[in-house]
Length: 72
Image 1: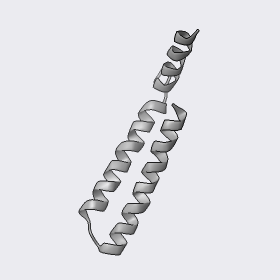
Image 2: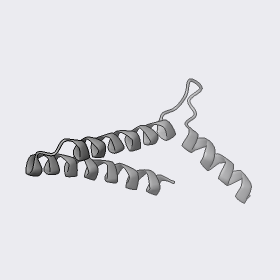
Image 3: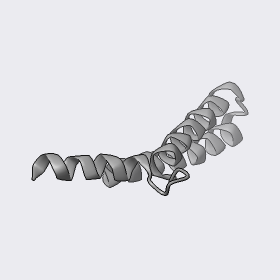
């Protein structure tokens, strides 16, 4: 699961960089803005999966714990 989250973060950074290049090269606003919005949503999803709640458990930890119980 960590690999998937890492790929999503890399894709989000690539979207932001691509949006800046597209905006500077063409002057377009709509497509780069949508690219930045998509990157923000992807980063938000990664944060939801990785940030712990009040009890200190994150959803990714709970998924990994459930997978370990099912395998054993």
